[in-house]
Length: 105
Picture 1: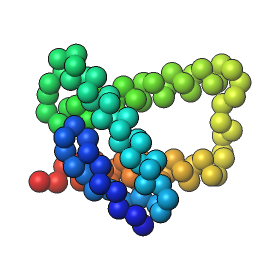
Picture 2: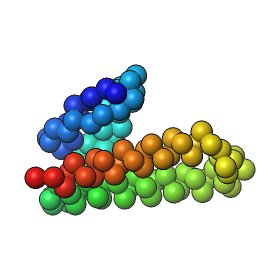
Picture 3: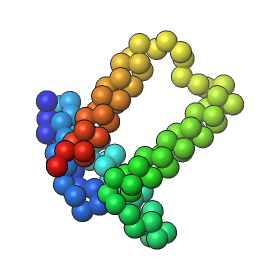
């Protein structure tokens, strides 16, 4: 398992990922950092946890909208796709691990 050091909102986080996924993880962290910068530009200066929460909610809202558009277009991901379920499970586990790291002193 690879270790990647990410910088989000000036804070450094070390996160594990599958070998070969380092660039992808850095790209995702860059997107989160970009969202936080947008929130701060709107006057959303708050605590780190609140900024991360707002960025996550904005991204979840965008994902929700995209899923709706895909469903309307008739190209929704097939239900019961084991590969998709496995990937979503890994993403959920990583998100929980990151949240746990943020809550540690």
